[in-house]
Length: 181
Image (tube, rainbow, N blue to C red; front, side, top):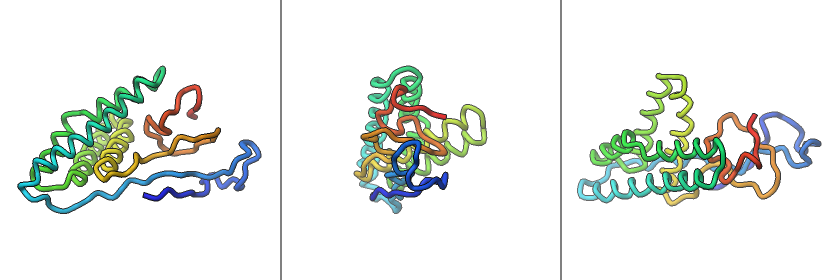
């Protein structure tokens, strides 16, 4: 998936006198489209294993980020790793794969179903929907052999503006190197 640059929605001039860097958003990676279609019955056990391996890889990456983080970030990333391993959504996706859906499609259906439930519940549960969507996007990217979606780790100081950031965004960011407002 190709990265793209977009002008900042704040409509500031291209060069900001405050940061002395271009006021732009990017590069970002969009969510890859899910692979749809029917998996032949004899291929479904392998598809389930492919799905489980991708979900576990994503969970392990969150856990590794949690162990490298400090403070609240450790707790948030640890909770996201646990959410990536949640038996509820994993079981729902596995059932869909066993019914013939691709792992990508099953991931989308399962996570989107839980997002709808969490939004209906509201409060703290609704706040976890960003994490669920991030897990979905990362599992699909892993299944498709694509790089993890999201904002790339900057190599220089940046001002990051976003409506909604999942916990590991940008990867490797720490409390000392970033501020949320």
